[in-house]
Image (cartoon, rainbow, N blue to C red; front, side, top):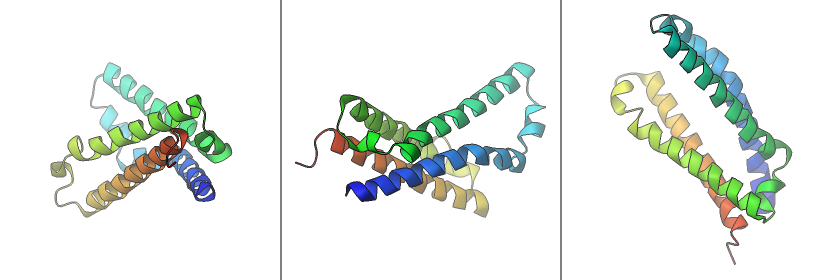
Length: 142
C-alpha cells in the first residue's frame, strides 16, 4: 500500500507543479489580460497577486509530494497535520467546483463542461489521496 501511495503522491506532486505552470496558457485562453483591463487597477492587482499565490501554493504543495512523499506516510504529528490539512484544502476546493462554479457558467459549453468534470475528478482524487495519508498518519487501519 505504501508503494502505491508513494507513486500516487509523486504523481500528484508532478501534477500540482504542472498545474501551476499551466496558468500561463490558461491565462491566454481565458484572456485574463484583456479582462483585467476592464476592472479597476486595485482589483486587477489583487487578482494578479491571488493568481500568483495560487500558483505558489500549488508548487509548495507539489514539492514535498514529489521529492519527499514519505513525509505523508511516516507517522508523525506534523505529517498528520499536513496530510489532513491538504485533504481539507482539496475537499473545500471540490466543494467550490460545484457550488461556486455553478452549472450556469458552463451550460451549453462542451469544453467548459468537460474541464469542470475533469477538475472535479482531480480535486476528488487529491482529497482522497491526502485523506488516505491522513488515515495512515492517524493510525488507521489497525
